[in-house]
Length: 196
Image 1 (cartoon, rainbow, N blue to C red):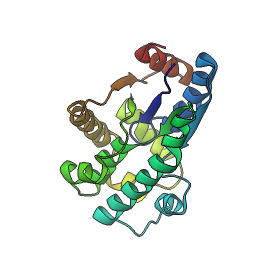
Image 2: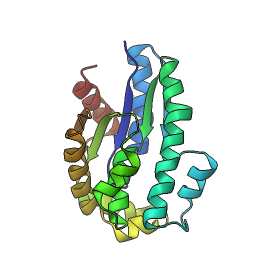
Image 3: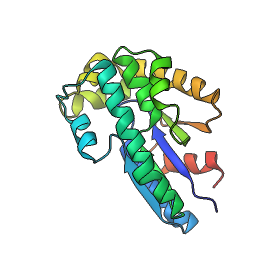
Image 4: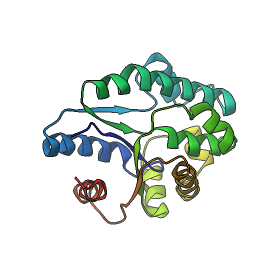
C-alpha cells in the first residue's frame, strides 16, 4: 500500500486532536504499517512561539511565520516519514491557514501565495454543530486571540470556502459530519470515505 498523507482539519474544538490520534492508531492496525502523527504549529522553536497564547505576531507576519513553520515541517518531517514508507497524519495543515489567517484579516489569494508549494494532503474536514463547538470553547482553557475574534460558525464557513478553493487545485478532500457521533464512529466514517 502506498503511504498516505492525511490532514485532519476543522474549526476550534471540533475534536481534531482526538480524531487525529485515534485515526493514527487505527490506521496503523488496519494497514499493518507505521504511522507518523504530527501537528501544526510544530514542536520546533518557531512552532512553539506560534503556539504561545500571547503570540506577538498578527496578520501578515503571523501568516508568514506559520508558512515558514509549515515549509520546514514538510521538508524535515513529513517527506522523510513518507520516504520511510510511513503513513503521516497531521492535526492541522494548509487549510488552517486558509481559515485562521482570514479571521486575522488576510485574503485567500495572499494566504495561498505563501502556501501553494507545500505537499498536497488528503484532507479530512470535521464538521459539527457550531453551538456544540461554542460550548466546548467556553468550557475550555483561556481563549486564544484568534478564538476570541472568530467563531465556530464563521470558521465552518471559511473551511467550506477553503475546501472549494483546494478542489480547484485537485486536493483530495472528504467531509465528516461529527454531530452526535463518538470518536470511534467518526474514525470509522473516515475509513469509509478513504475506502480503507
